[in-house]
Image 1 (tube, helix red, strand yellow):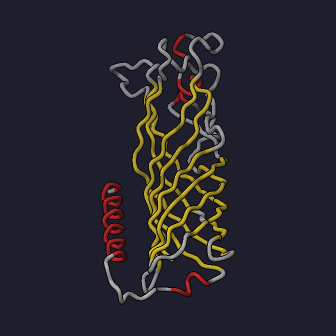
Image 2 (cartoon, rainbow, N blue to C red):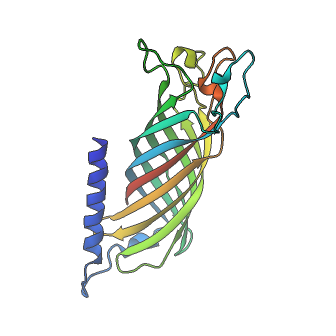
Image 3 (tube, rainbow, N blue to C red):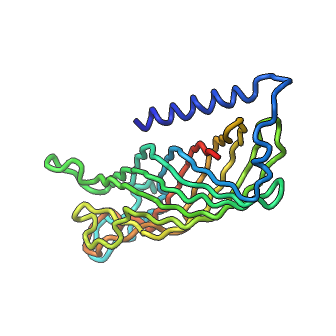
Amino acid sequence: MRKNLLTAIALTTATLVSAQFRPNSDREWNRVEQDEKKFSFGYFLGTNIMSYKVSPKAQNNHLPNGTTADDGVNSSGLVYLDQESKPGFSVGLMGKLRMNDYVAVKVEPGVHFAQRTLIFKNVGITEENPDINKREVKSTYLEIPLLLNFSGDRWFNTKPYVQGGVAYVNNLQSNEDKEDDNALGVFRTNTHNFSWQAEMGIEIYFKRFKLTPSVKGMFFFNNELVPDQATTIGYANTLNSLQTRAVVFSLKFE
């Protein structure tokens, strides 16, 4: 279903952009009043791909009474942890404060649903439990960003822009407060996080609304990893930190 959503977004965007750029000397400038509003509002829908930036512990940096299974890298310096990411879904609202023709302040509170699979290669597997080294990490990020938007000159019914800023991000599925750890199959991350982001897109003006295809990169500042108990071998205790990195493709409507 997510693949179908991504395909639909791409085809819709291509069709609409093509329609806006077709030669037409008599084309009218749509929604000129939209650029003159002090405040404007809208919403966005999109899809995302998220992964972790992994910082492992060095080889031979064991836990108390640990073994080489506690290391985050092997003898060749390769990280034991693999990860697989699935496309997620993003949705949110937008608010814009116009400063002048080229600069605006924006807030875009949104929710990002993501799923990642972590594979710890330094955890032994058995025929009875072949997935003991895998952890399904589902995340629901509630994001509240403050952004500065810079627009270019309008060309007929299109206008490019770039924007960036910082955000507070609350992970509603963090498991941070649970006492169980990876020894019992529970992977824990921090609830409260902070990120910076950068985005670019093209605003397309139609007679009844404005559509904005955009692509955004999100990068967390803080370490999201909650360590396992000292008695748990492997898993989170082989890592120094995990930090989310994400690419978000969105269609915005105003």
